[in-house]
Amino acid sequence: MEDRIKELELPLFAGYLFCCFPLEQRVSVLRLPSVVSVVRYGKDPVPVPDQEIAALKRLVASSYPLSPWPFLQVGEKIRVHHGPLKGVEGTVIQVKNSSRLVVSVWLLQRSVAVEVDSAILIPVRQPRASISKFVGVAPREPARVCRF
Image (tube, rainbow, N blue to C red; front, side, top):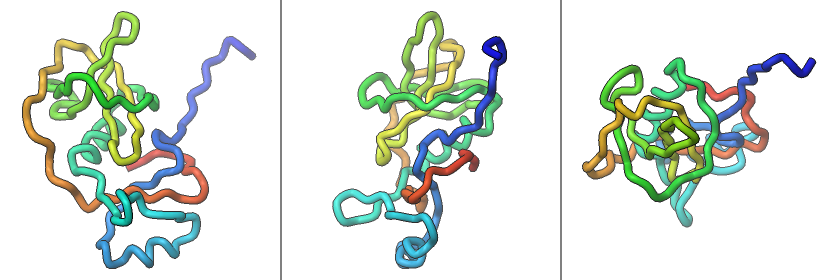
């Protein structure tokens, strides 16, 4: 029936799994079934910044509907200053008559968008946060559900 709306639970970043492990255990992680490689810059594994992981966790935990979004590199960085997403940073874009907060994972070149009230957004004028222990791992098979 075409008049029904279906809700699907799909991964926000298909083919990626976030995990936290000491660098010296990289070989053990690579031996796990379905793991192809660890995200790296050149030859060196690179962790995803704490700020990006925290923002994704907040988006997933919120009651707002999320959707994958094309990766954005330019645009004003903003921070949510009120509500359940308070402190989350990203880029603001306009889609039709609504504002969307786009949160990006630079290493994966992937983004997620969530509709927000533009009144709760303020410009960011601070340096980036420190790097975390979270490293993106590319599994052989796409994940079925995105959960933190």
